[in-house]
Image (cartoon, rainbow, N blue to C red):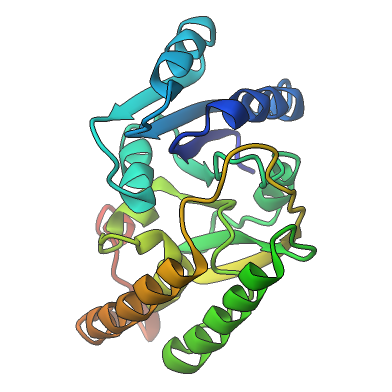
Length: 252
């Protein structure tokens, strides 16, 4: 059973959403699990930095990290994960569309015995525009055909995984879009769990559907190239298959 979690939230110009999200996390998780919240401000151009400074002073278990400029969601995630204090990571979007109440549900579906385990949300009733829903389904079909990735909602930001597993994965820009595929590539297991999805209360999305499409196509070719060069050797010892990993090398 997971006892401690680090919740990593990358944000960019989300000053009107992050306060409510933090309050929801506190109401949901207080007295249920030990947690810290790591907010990575990815070069916001509004007053997010100043707003977070006040929160950082008041809340003991909230860590705020500020990027000098906008590096993108994947870089913000790895900054937060590298600076986390606990072994298990929960990721959330900072726009409030992920429901913190689903964190416990995902944790309960996590099996610590499985190497490279990830639990990811599957947004059943999405509160997005029709155009975004269509773009999402198109992206799913392309990934399934090209990458053989049948994860129903790879774009869902709410996830649970081990810090050490994540840090063994090859890192690249836009990596967050392909985490389920990467975990499976490393002989891991990905479990999808139905989660709530809410309408954005404030602000706007940072990507247009056209931008997502262009970036997604180029990223898929890059991931195909990367996948062909990843080898995950298996040793045969005493007629048993043993996966090679950092934990195996340490005898754990």
